[in-house]
Length: 383
Length: 233
Image (tube, rainbow over all chains, first blue to last red; front, side, top):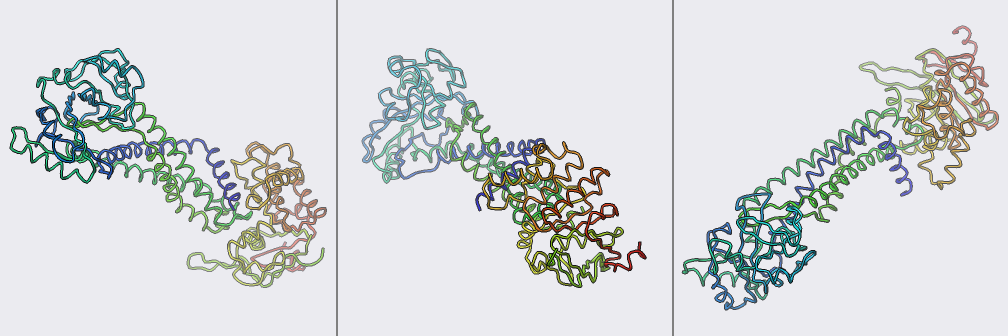
């Protein structure tokens, strides 16, 4: 059974390969649609990763109440000890963030000022792939630059670069499984405080680790309650909820692109259906010959479905592959209100795209296959 | 020649064309013995091809009985009829009808694709059949690279490859020059006499019909009796 099916698939592939112009044009259309779909899907997946709360998440972000941009969130660094004293808090890290652009942007540069002794705990996933960590520890203006940012700006260890009024020297290039870390530059907290006009003693936020995720809500309420009557009141949220709040416009924008992705998928279905229908119309007599020599209607339909599915699969392979290569090469990072969303190629998107292509090919070619297999042989021979 | 390979009684075909019922074939009683070479002649619209299509199982009769190769093919479902055609009938068309994007080898291989046979056996069978029609040196040529006579030989090889008992040919020499046509007729004669194939051939050409053991004439959908032939002719 499988051997017969494979022989029919081989027949379908011969039909496609030996009509190269028609096949290439269809593949081009399918690849374009799936390129768009994959890019949009990568945005959605990247967004889901940074906004969907999981049971293992134990980090809170303390921000200035009613502020969204890092430039306007100013909290006294001495809150550190007050927060640390709250029951359930395991660790507190003060962070200063400086960005070159608070609005929505595709070219955002983010400096994260972190106490050097706490960086390993704040971002344990990062690894230095070029340059040295020691150089960063020993150098006041040293920066550990994410690999995507370094790639985009052509930076290497020893280079100096300036952005958002901050001039740093690259100590190392870092890599992280968290896409966001690959698009930022880590610097020393005091250095960034001094480089900004707010000076020492002022931070943008505190990242607070609690003992268990069950403590998140209680600790958040306790922190905000503690500073309610202070000059700089706070809003404390789980890290992912904080991202969703701060980058609200980004979420709306990316949410909208979902419809573009659906549109691309519909266009691909239409394109394949049209191509397969034209194939069936152009091969009415040929299919009748196959039926005359003993191909049952089901086998004719199977060949048609195989052609549609192979077209969809091959086009998707090209489109998804190009999208993955493009996203890897460009290292796109969306920025809004100081929050960054890096679009990193993901295996899940690749697999879902390939799976979708099989479904699309099937859906698009079922109608034409039905037409091909039901047509009376004698009528087809006369056509 | 012995028992009937084709046996039909009161065979008729009707179809609707707008408000009218058209009857291209009626009251056909026909027996064709195994190993016989029968030519069907008659003017255009006389029902020759319709009869050929019914016998080949690619069209269904409206009335009558039709047994071919020991099977009442009017009772078979579409799928069983397709399987029956694959094993019992080889169809040769006037215009060859090869698949243009497949080589001669691949065209001849088509009827075997749905059979459970090892690839090596399939390849040997296709090569042997192409050799039988004298095209062993044209196996990997596409139809566009072959002459009309060669294309028709490929079509005959395709009809033969599954070793059917019955070959039906609809004007097999109609699109060929005299020489190529003669070669095809010689091949069909050889298949009948040396390989025991039963052949039913539709033709307009009296010279082509001379190759057959028996010639029957159709007119207005009916078979003519021998005494009517000269009168009709």
